[in-house]
Image (cartoon, rainbow, N blue to C red):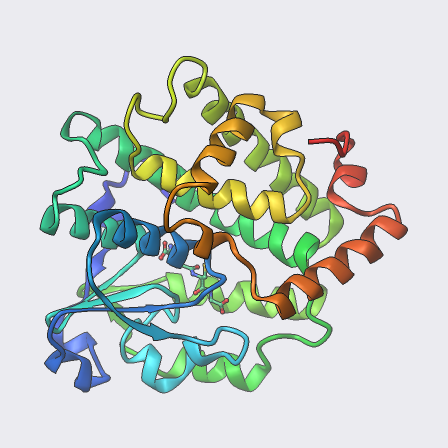
Length: 302
Ligand SMILES: N[C@@H](CCC(=O)N[C@@H](CS)C(=O)NCC(=O)O)C(=O)O
């Protein structure tokens, strides 16, 4: 993402009415979230909803079955990504934009303090920029799909369905996603790329660690959206076998504290079949000398 772009220009946000091709949602009242259980961006939004005590209706999208690139879902989010929020018939996409929308509409409890709003935007932008790294880590150290998860036909439909603009502008994001899936289908995530992604996330975590040197939360004494966002990435890395507490001790303690917060356990509890898939994959990696700690030269303790 271009560092000079503002959030509005870069992440855009609310769809124009003509871009909502699945028309039924324009009639919906209240808050509806399209999301997936094991999606970091969905987790972030669900934790915001939980912390604010907001009632919402759940519309799970099965990423494994490519429901996100069905004609119906592309008619709701032309980028084919979760989450998407429908609020009284308006469609908001991009998790960070959804969060700012929720903060403005439901200001209590405050998750984005007014004094930190600009900084929070910048941090969330940096976090969003690491999304591909989180994907690389996930698809290398958590599981690896034996067959390409999206066939050539799936990708053709991905390109074909859904509006060609987002918030009135031609949108390059969908093509980027298609390229990612084509490359992943051909070569998966190489060990070298996975290692680079772990290093990028480790550098970001060092910044988080520094913030925790003299406060319980990242903006001081109270939980904010920034804690939620980094918690989700920390959790994904822990699942990948990253020794969080050994690498970043203050962050390890913060992670443990947040894990015990009411309502957060559901976000970090893995459905048993998925937990079993991850465990099997990691046992194989370890046996081959390719686990995250072996590949990145870290001690496994922690
Ligand atoms: N920048 C987007 C990223 C959304 C995103 O990439 N979502 C992932 C799940 S975390 C997704 O929908 N992946 C589609 C797939 O796996 O096919 C946001 O913050 O909402």
